[in-house]
Image (cartoon, rainbow, N blue to C red; front, side, top):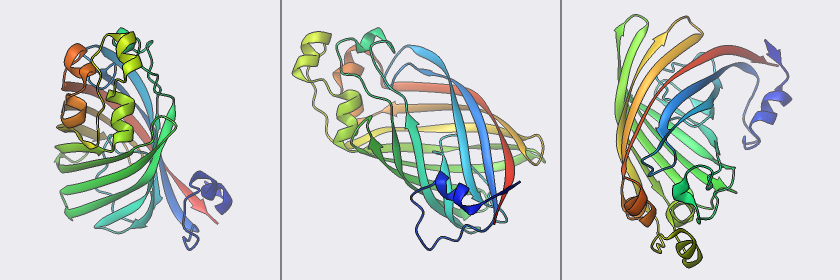
Length: 260
């Protein structure tokens, strides 16, 4: 598959001017279906489907990637380090999501954009950090950190897992966990004005099958505990739970792109 450089450039408008686009790249497209809480902190559950995408240079070792990774574009790629831009869509949240949210302000559909760094200290461990700025949905900064150990239990079958944590500023906390005076009167929840802090800690595990060189399938499960500003919210305390579980399956297809 051959594409002009201007097409790839249009996918990521934040590329630095000195980035050389010409060469061989890969694109991984996929989707995942999950059973998860209806909203962060909810005791109710929903079934959701979300797309996945990753773009990077061919020819560098990519021993591991996680379903938690935001769609990303690698600008620096070596055997030990991968870094670049990352972003994700943020789906809206309103009273239609759950009756628990009636009287609270809607969270608008938007995005989070920023960057990521992957570090591989050994050939069976990856540490990833992402920092993203909210756009439209909230005006906070969100930092996700995770470490995953992984090993092959068969030639085409890999198991992985490790800890995760999220930190966010007050703009994020207030959008998802805050309850102002007007919302308190309308919802019956106690007023709550959260600040910045760690939002959650937890762990996840996955099993991944490389069906072919290009086709990959996986099953995964995660647990996280809301903490700090999130756990102290009246929404979580009065109507939800800090314990959050997620299970799901996913698949992706990788294809090459040659940029002139």
